[in-house]
Length: 171
Image 1 (tube, rainbow, N blue to C red):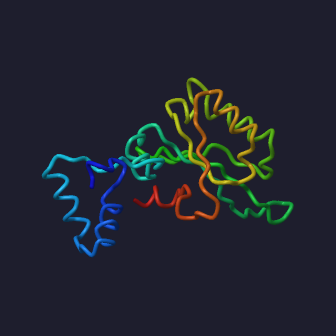
Image 2: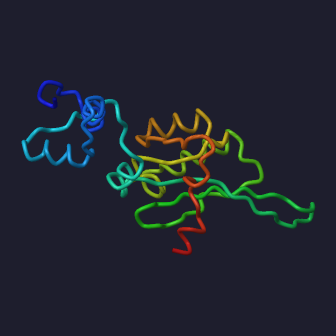
Image 3: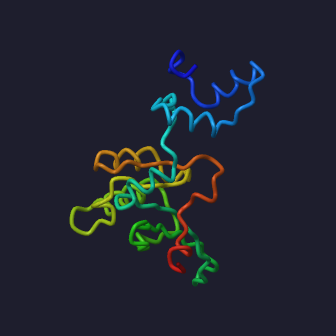
């Protein structure tokens, strides 16, 4: 079956054998194909798993996020937004800047600061992982792309994938 149908994998062969009332496990099919030096069907259209991507590019990846702190000032309680970047390989957290209003102009300045040739946190980084916060605007992502940093946006509603400064500081 595998020789006549090179596009079939273990599961497809297993299903075909079951339709002939032959009950053999996928592991057995795999072993038989391996013993006869028959390669299984290639994985068509599969994407690289997240864990493989991280292991392959570990030293060239950083992650960024915001956290906020409530501060008492002469005007009362003020929310400060802190932009931080984590070098994943070194587990180094760098506070990029603090502001009360992280608007488009401020984010563009942060992009320039982060990619500065001498002191920028992202100067040796090829990939920056960010969440879908609106502060990471199209202008911000485009600027980083022009500087050679691929911005990877996390899928919607994926809180366990976010950059977490406390994790890096405590580990």
